[in-house]
Image (cartoon, rainbow, N blue to C red):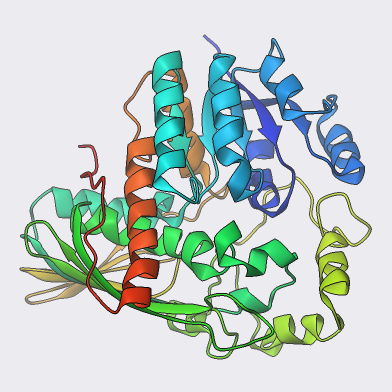
Length: 397
């Protein structure tokens, strides 16, 4: 008996889609039916790559009779309207992180899919990564005792990659809090038990030419007594991938000769219009687009920087090739096979939820809780006080 395929439509063919492209193109459980994007070059590339027709609006994609589920990778502020539209047409939804920019919009999305009886999954985030899921599995087994402390950090060049003006405006979801903290908070919430009870944070916006948060550091308290320290800098100096065996966030080997490449590219843009054009020129289907649908070779698992989970009887360190377990008397590697298709864990969860009706780990309720912690980081930094985030939930078992 052949495996049924999930018939998927794509709303938005920008950066998030290109990161999922090798996954969607090569997972045999996915059949791409159609897509929509306001950029004609992107739509033309999609039609060449997949031999299907694009449609001219998200509304038309939602109404497409052959589409079962829609991957919504449109700008953050449009997620709520597009999820509600998809749900109204009875479509299952995978929506990119951040789920939304407000808790009210998150709740609207949850309620819309609940009314429709459709799946709502939020991702990709790096809490889908196989080493994180393996660490979570081993923590849940109880073999190491309770989680007591988590340390997570990441240093990248995020803020100096070419951006559109709204990507440097916090109110429109720009900066590192919505786009990057969503990854890190999803990870530490999954491993720490999910329910954050307090947030004390500082943020940094240190470059007036990039007028949004480029860094943060926060101390999170969890129900049950565990705590986590999370720090991130996108200012393009130290690269913490050096501490991950020079494996990049996407699982690729990094050449140290590429150090500073983001800042060098950005130096070619002298104003916001040129910077937006610089970004657009490298987008899917644009003249400088160099990607393809083939899965990259030689990959290890994706990651989001160094991470240590301290339990009663061991420290766990998820790495691109597995999970190091530093126990009472020995340090051992719980090795993982290299991925053949990147981010296949995302399709595992989406496919099993839609086709087999399995419960969703990265649900709307889960992502709303992560959004609440992201907003608490901003509020705590502004008020210099601890904040109690709303809507906290534990991970499903």
